Length: 232
Figure 1: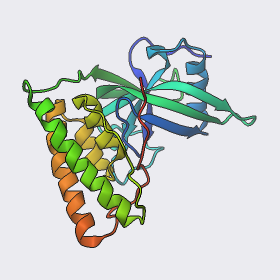
Figure 2 (figure 1 turned 60 degrees about the vertical axis):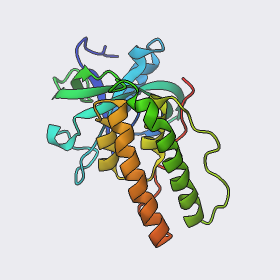
Figure 3 (figure 1 turned 45 degrees about the vertical axis):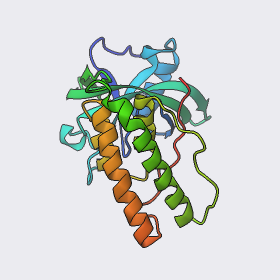
Figure 4 (figure 1 turned 90 degrees about the horizontal axis):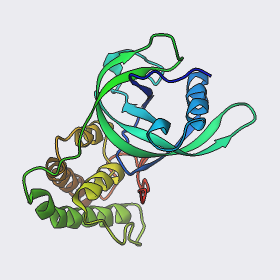
């Protein structure tokens, strides 16, 4: 089995956006990604079991390898659980860990999957005190949005009983679970700091809540709704 190069991280292009702390289950069937999972399974837990998840731009397919097909900000996924099938497929459970900016894609032929040269993006709070001040406003807007969403789906039960008060965790939870487009989620992932992300989420939640209140229907499919958060 080939060793991962010292430079660059393995890339797994997907039609979704991953956030730190969010659980992402995947069904792996393509031969190139099967090899990636086999390699990761042989590594110790932690950063050596991480690969980069990058969202595909609209109109591109998962098999596309052109750099233009990929957004430039992604998040690593750490391999946590693996179920192996006799035919070589895998069902895996991963958890989002670290944001990164993609500087370039390399495919030297050492591995069948793409690798990316990345810059790690620190999770900064932003101006002193601003992120903390935004937390109660975002929680209130998110609860209103969830109530409207539950009613639109004919569900009278609350979707979320308790929300985190940590600004960073809350910003990732809202971004991952609100029924948003890939472009909206990507914008939130790429936010320069937590305060900026929370401000953007307020705008998006108010927009979506207004649509729900007026239409009494869910404006976009709920394919990625209710993604569980990792306790780690």
